[in-house]
Each structure stands twice: as structure tokens, then as C-alpha cells.
Image (tube, rainbow, N blue to C red; front, side, top):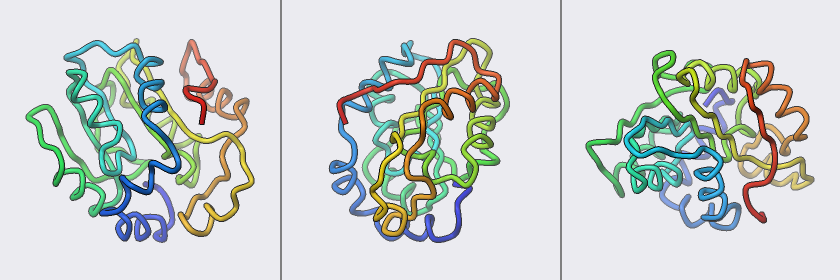
Length: 187
């Protein structure tokens, strides 16, 4: 989403293996931490931006949410649809800079391990903020700064994680309030 062509091609290529691959990068603990941070209320609408094969989406559906799942990769979306369906699930293909979601239309926005793939994290955060209703919550789970340079080439990451103070600044710059930046798990 909003990344050079290589990233979409990479995720199209690994879509059928992604669920197994991602287990070595992030765990259920991250997902549950994100849900706790959001303070989910069943029956509300959540967007899963950069949804991939549905790691966040699946849990949101299990918690009684209506979910709009967005990804740039047709293969990732096809994989998601091959393992889950629900009348409360709306799948959309889209890009970080121009999400296919109306303004002020979701209660919760989630982006798990997505931000390090976008060209401009501040632009992506502003776009995610645009779709959140007043009083809604945006939860982004991603990596702290790291020196795992192989991720930049092997997985087409654009950023080697982030400094937490930059994340805070980008959230505030997007007009968000009550910003909290910190760990959601042990990894």
C-alpha cells in the first residue's frame, strides 16, 4: 500500500505462506495488545489497513466487530477470503495514501506491521486518521528501530522500524489526541 511495486509483488508471491512466515516476526500477543489498547466495543466498525491474510481481521470478527479489510495485494486478499468469510467482513483493495473508505466512517483503525512498508508514514497516518469517526481509536503496531537490514531487501521494507518520538509526532501532526506510544508485547 503506497509502496514501490516490489513490495506488492513480494506479498503476492508469499501470500500462501505468509501466515506461517509471520509467526517468526510477531505473535498473538501483539494482536491481543492492540485490541486491549483500542478498548473494543462489539458491534462497532473497525478497519484493518494492510490486512494481509487477516491476522487482525480474524480476531476482530471473533470479538464481534464489523470489519473493513484493506490491502494492496490481490493475492493476500484472496488468501484471506480462502480462510474466512462473514457477513460482517468487507474486503477492499487499496493504497495507503488513498484508502477506499469514507471519511469518519469507522470506530477503530488498525495497522499491524504495515507502516514500515509505506513510502511516507506521516501521510499514511493522516489518511488512516481521515477514516476514523470523532472519538474513534487508531492503533498502529510496528517495529522499533532495528538493524535487521535483510528485511529491507528480502521483504521490501522501506523503513528499519521507527523511533517512538517520531511516531508520537506523526500522530499529533495528524490531529490525534490522547496519543500513547509504547510496547504491546514482549517482541
